[in-house]
Length: 317
Image (cartoon, rainbow, N blue to C red; front, side):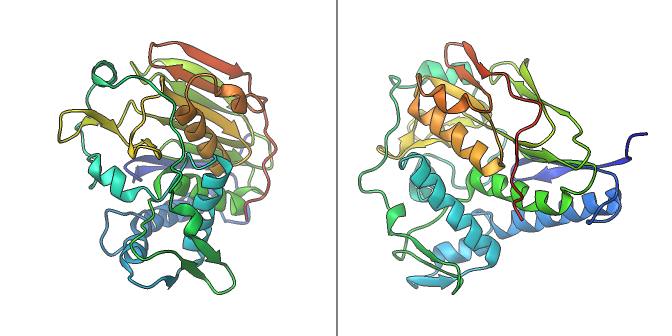
């Protein structure tokens, strides 16, 4: 007899979040555990949104001091942002707040997307993104013992997809001894559980929402990054989106429009997706270990490998 499941679905992180908990465990009965995860995600949404003036992130970004005390979760987020920048060679840069605001993403995103095909028609010549040789992220230091972040005053952080992945990984810890669980933070997914339940993770096309591939996961994570759902025209009428080329500070049009990555943790999957998209065609080798899907702007789809039924996932704590 399969364990009873509780499901919570709710708006969060600019999209939809879903929590599934199967069976009882350290976090309680499935309904109570799922409700607790929902509450925590909604709290973190308010705490880490750059669009909320009273959020911890906005307070940190606006603090004139060089060293600023931060909460434990904020410290983990800043650490993940710095790790992402180092791992990607500076491509995944969480300090480009001014640049993304100038591109037109200065407030909550609403239903103003232009069709992907139209955005691509107007887009400049395709080119791989590059790191900014004067990037600001190397000037940031994190003191976990003191609970402080030190950075040049005026440098601001964008939580972005790294935060969604981190939240999935943090919340996975208490749920690992339940028979099964799945956490979907608006596209960043973490699954697991003691019973090894297999769940389908579907990859939809950014052009027409058709299903391109389905991974079967019993443990691990998946993340998708792309320019299909959030593309708009900027003040000059040029196509724009939220994935920036650090070298230029402008939205990147690399020839890839969407990447899905499978990895042991959601943060790792998130960094893989963005790094692959920003590097452009020929960069999919990084997805071969656990699996992934790359969608090119001419509609071609590359299935990098068949993901195993389970990906070893360390305890995120």
